[in-house]
Every structure is written in structure tokens, then in C-alpha cells.
Length: 431
Image 1 (cartoon, helix red, strand yellow):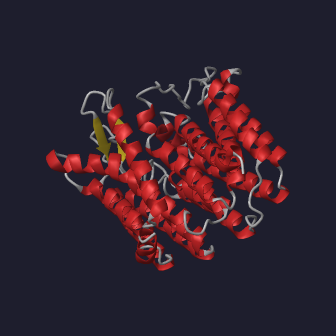
Image 2: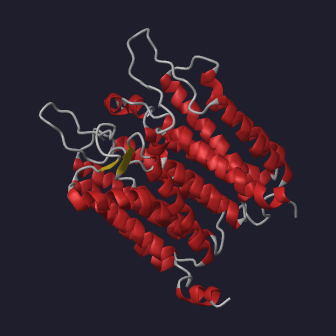
Image 3: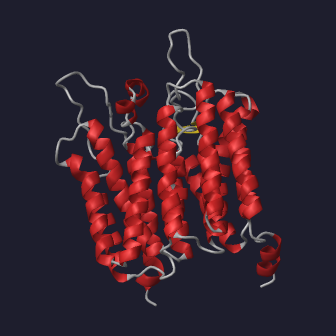
């Protein structure tokens, strides 16, 4: 087995996961909360819509590629995805269709990157952590790149055009890597089940419907809580319908989505916080692969989510910042690596689970915020004029619901867990 066969799928999965998640986060328009007042048309420019389109496209494309066993098809898919993301760099595309076009491109890239990962542990870990890490550290990316101003509400006859979410040279490199790996490797013959693809594609659609009807930024606390409750119930049901490996990784994604109720902001010069978080992520992955402790990682995700309830002052503020910048990346690495290092589930489930923070945006986007005397929500602050790192959370109700969600995911995870804690620790420690 040559170097490409050993490392190619892992590198491609990591690049595809990071690129797809970054493109989705970068495409977010600044006024989607205002646009939500327009009903369905407003939903079409929300992060919820973007994440749903990308996830459904990725799962559908991956299912087709696994059926066809076509490396040429995977390479062509990566090329089409890069073309869709990069089109606004050469053609004027307004924000509203541009966001959907970008989401389709991200889904194609993700599906092509996931094709060689089927049945392989290390590439599946790289794929999931690529998406989750890009989502978690997206605020840190703004230390090196100024985000484009993206607006969906424009004056009549004055559409707002936006640049591509990813520079063309980076897209070109991604196409070369993804295409080359797809043409030289083949996925495991065992990974082409129907049920994981159905569950992985249906859940994002359920989340979108719940967001549109009950859980937008215009919804009240009761309506939002009902939407979250139904979404969580649907996810738990989906996890129970799948074989144990797939169900467990889906529950990790649910807990990770709940943790996004706290938003991290990095000021200029805070790059060392990002570096420390990346080190924690690598340490979590290394520990999880060597000594699987998935339940420990899930419990850490619950504790991170709960820190949003701590007072915003003194030592409590430092605890919350530490939890979200250091503990959260480590917990994600530990949980994902522990689950996927034992029995690798089907690739469509891994894609859907990794995308959960982007397809279940109730916590990151529409959790209830306080409203001041002028009727404006106290949206997330910027830390440019404040401390090096800041973590903002919604009203306590949103944090409580998120913590309950992460706890339910952990309890359900424990019910479905293999004995990978004590037994494997003793067994591997004695080698």
C-alpha cells in the first residue's frame, strides 16, 4: 500500500470537510434576522437553509456515488462543487441565489470528499472533525481574513452582489486533491446501506420545516422550545433506527449542536487562543484513538454547554471562555475519535452527524435573546473593543434547553455505548 492509499482519503476528507463548513459559515448574510420577517422568502437566506441544502446534497450525492462505485463521478462532483462556490468570483451573483448556489457547492464538495472514506476509520474521523472544527473555529478565521459584507435586503433595482466564499486558488487545490484521491482509491464494499442515507437526508429537512414554522428568530420562547423539543425527539428517533455505530455518532453531533448556544469571539491578537484550541483538538483525537472514552467526551460537551449559565464576570467569565476555547475542541476530538475508532458507521450518517451544528441552528441562530426598549434583540457582540476572547450566550432559557439537549444525547449515547471505556483502557494500556 503506497502513501496515497494510506493518507490520501484522510487528507481529502479533512480538506473537504473544512472547506465545506467554512464556505457555509462564510456565506451567512448579516441581515438574515431582518429577512426572516418576510416569511418563507426570508428563510431562504438563513444559515438554516444553507446548512440544510448542503447536508441533503452531500448525503444524496454520496449515496449515489457509493452505489455507482465511480471515482470519475466523485472527481467530477468535486469539480462541480468548486465551480458552484467559485462562480461569484467571475460572475456577478446577488446574495439570495448566491447563498443557495454556495450551499449546493459545499454539499457537492462534502459528498465527493466523503466518497473515499467509506469503511475507513481515520478518513471518517478526519471528515467529521474537519466539519466540526471549521464550525467551531470559524470566528478565529477572521483573525486572518476580513469577512465580506453580505446583505440580502437591498433597494429595488440595486441587488447586492457578493464575492466567492473561498478564494479560487484554494478551490483549485481542493479539486486536485479530492479528484486525485477519488480516482486512485475505492471505498469499502460494505458501505452502501439505504437506511443511513434516508435518515441522514431526512433529518435536515425536518429541522428546516421546524425552523420555518416554529423556530425562526421571530419566534417566541415557547414556540422555539417546542421546535427544539420536536427536533431533538426526531434526532433521538433517527439514532435509534440506525445500527449502534451510526446512532452513536449522530448523538455526538446532537450534543455538539447544543454546545453552539455559546458563541466565541476573538479580537485581534488572540491567535494563540485558536492555536491552543487546535492543540486541544489534536490531543482529544490522539487520546480518543488510543483509549476510546466517548462517554467522557459527551459529558464534557454537556459541561461546556452549561457554562453559559455562569455569571458574566470575574472567574466565571474565564471558566466559560476556557470551556469554549479549550475544553470544547478537546471534547469534540475525544468523542468523535472514540466513536469512529471502534466500529466505523456508514459514511452518510457521519456526514449528517458532522453537519448537525449547521443544520440544527436553533441554538446558534434563533435561541431567544433579550429585547431592549427599542425592540432590537441584543445580538452577539464583537470583542474587537473588549477582551481578547469573549463568549456570548442567549437568555438563560436557551442555555437551559441546550444543556438538557446535550444531557439527553449523552444519556441516549450511554444506552447505546459499547464497553469501550474500562475494558479497552485496560487492554490497550497493557500492550
